[in-house]
Length: 523
Image (cartoon, rainbow, N blue to C red; front, side, top):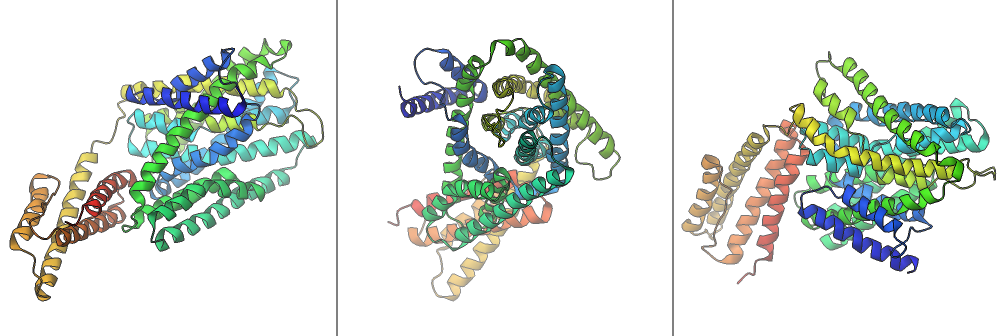
């Protein structure tokens, strides 16, 4: 079986396992990972590709873009300082700690190479963390913090990896050089991501064909990532920034007709890429272990255990310090129990796998990277270990009595009432305009539509209306009412600071109603 056939067969197998896991209500990471490991151990079937790093690069950009597209710029802005502290401060702290432990366990590893291992494993994974946090049914604010951290910290981790490899090649780097690399990475990534995001916003607002607009959005992650890397910026940060700007534009534009298709398409793409990424990590694990030298085998379990404990302890320590600092602040974001959840939510995933596979065989100086195979095997084993621990987040949240916000249902009820009032006001305006133009709508139709929205006000029953007049005319009226509700929904979001997750869910329902009305035949 050649490489192409093997990758296709592996993709089909990964998707099949992921689909089965979803039907059972499980997370897809562990089942797909387990099947990948078993496949890698078999003497037949798909084999671990020799160019795993290049494959990871291809799937990473759209995978991160899809995850960021489902997040919210507004929600992240509300916890921005906390997210940046975790995404930068915690990554540096963890990387330094892991590097120190690695040199203690394996003294022959140079400090810069040990720091590279820390940089690989310091960032939590957006894919793994988002899936686990949502399944654990955590409060919205905690989910927002964890998702925001995992989206941004990939950029800081990969930047730190770049600094470590430069230091390994040169023997040492100055503080000024480190600051320069970091500044260029952040500014280049954020700047290019913002430019691409604004271009996509222009496409969304100007394109009359939703298919074309969504096709441009679909291709955007690839040039965004590689252009950012070409200018030595952070490709991950560029993709995240572009996706957040695009997501906000799609949500804020009530007239964008391609939103339902985009949401559906990116949901499917993200699912496929997640399945393939975890399968690739699994199938690479036996291959990376088989490449270890005989003298490295006794070191591996101790190094994996020490690094895993270091990741857990340093994250809890950092969370404890953050809680102590913020507990007396009047506008504190998280309480003590929430910080325990943050401390335990440390799953790693495909991004750390990509970083590990990107380790060069040779440094710029021409010398071999010391103990590359040991670093790769350790990274993959630690990724698997954190994923095995991740399902315990849900029981821990329940034990701490941290569950989904109880006020979500009340918020949705208030929103539906406000939307019903906006629809009724728009209905009155349409009826008055039609009467003034001599094309008055039948009273039976107006009364039925009005009764439907009044029922939503009094009994919280979703408004529906039947055609009792010319179908084309009634469809036009109902579309106007849906547009009025969508506009009111966005106004309420900005007025009351309602989380975007709630807004997007209700907006999606309106989009589907509009889509169904437009698809209805006019006869």
